[in-house]
Length: 142
Image (cartoon, rainbow, N blue to C red; front, side, top):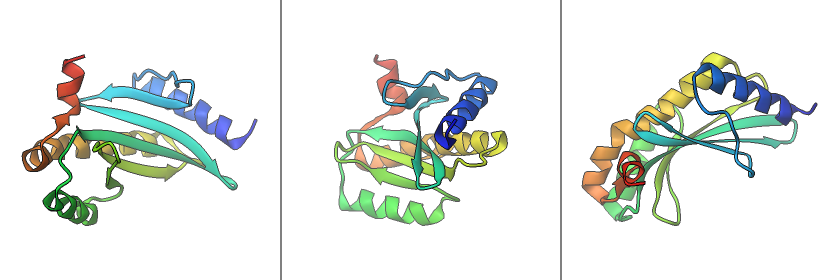
């Protein structure tokens, strides 16, 4: 069994332990609601190392103003780890990637909770500045 498969098994166990749906999509992504946000989890490898990337949606359809860009750059210097990312489709997300080779439950759970909490903590503030929809809003409309 290769390193990526080992990481996938470990992540499935951790997600089950946290009461989360541990089914990956066909493209290997885990997507689930966590609190008031949506979290995407992806596993990948580079060389001899494996990685686990956590991405939470902060806002969809934001107006990418200079003020917003300046604010998220500043926020990136203030968060403990991870970073805000603005995608081409004007989705603002927060992401953190951890090494998967020896990923333990505490590191997995702490990173997942941190990424979701940052998204939840900043969605209202950034929405006032740039508009868009919070994950909680577009989830409720589905």
